[in-house]
Image (tube, rainbow, N blue to C red; front, side, top):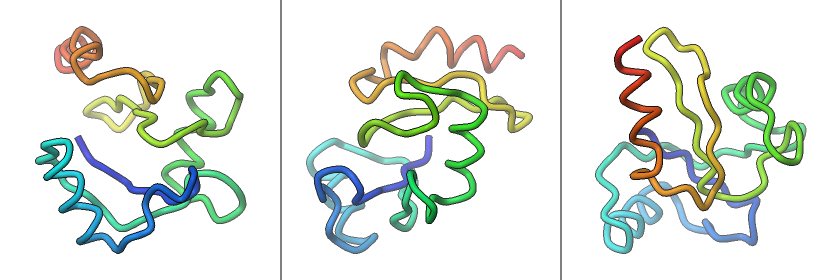
Length: 102
């Protein structure tokens, strides 16, 4: 699991990378790597998110609706599934296990 903070949704991530990582660890128990803040929508969207959105359209097409949208990517780098912001990691277990078997 990798985290890419984004401040495009209600300005929820105003801090720098260190502050965001600490907040996620303290408030949510996050132990996975957190990267620098990126944009996920618009012309300045990070290339990985442009690619993921093209490969796995969401409910509003090629945009990311809100923070905590999740993408499952296979070992080969192939995007497999997109999950809504409200989907908790435990609800993704079956798809993650299936991806590990591929």
